[in-house]
Length: 346
View 1: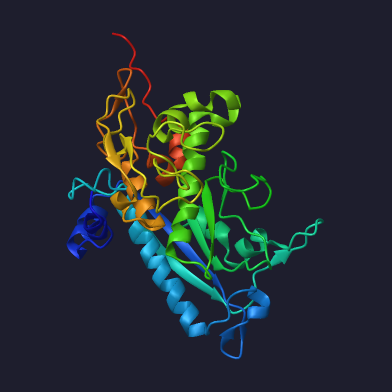
View 2 (view 1 turned 180 degrees about the vertical axis):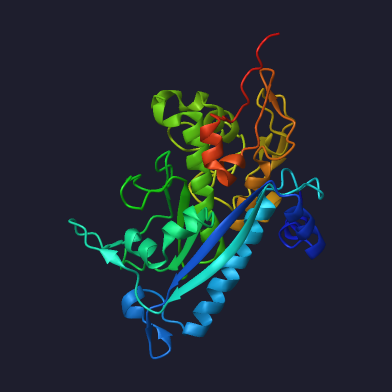
């Protein structure tokens, strides 16, 4: 896959995007919440620590990054779209409302020397999250804020009847809990679209690892897990020990964290991954995804078993893994795994 192909993948035509959305399996309603502490028409850098641009510029940046993140996530849900331009999307994100506060993020003091933590309970009360989740079906809240050494935050945080499966401390009490699951993503407008999408990447990894039972598996056996060992190609070290499909920080050819621009070639089956290891291996390097973090994230997501993946493991078909992103409660209620259960003998 060439750099030009990756660029085309990220900038496909409006008709292509519309077709993918129409065929999407899961719709994810979203509320976007923005915190802009202002001082004389600018973001107050004394509050944010590292961002003091104008309010107008900051609004435009967060709007642009939100649109770009939605596009990247929807494109990423198109199974093997890098070789099948007609591949349908598995998810469609719909912004139901954007809420803006011209004030600092609510925080709570912590006992340690760390900066105060974002007060997610207060934010959820401010936006009346109970109504949005229980009455209007909201599944995700996207918060645009800041960090700059001034506040602590969780890149993703979940609440619901099945617990907190997220890239957080997994505190079951740091969000209001209702009878259905929702996930809060916290972005930093000092950063960009790629970092926002990376929050989702880590949430996906948390979901797949949970479904696959990694938390119940001894560290020495992580390399035998279906997702982390077989698909990713890693072990307890989190490094790539067998060039498979990699994870957010580690493409198959990576030698360290965040190694998205490594020109080193490795032979991997990421573009033809099969659970039994029979997929065709090809030598790839960073040019495959354009050498950028966002290019890698989209390429990796498009390699996840998605809609109509046709993959089989020990005689059982693989599920559409986007189910755990788009309908986590349904997946848990039906006890759905990464691989469909064996059919009973007749």
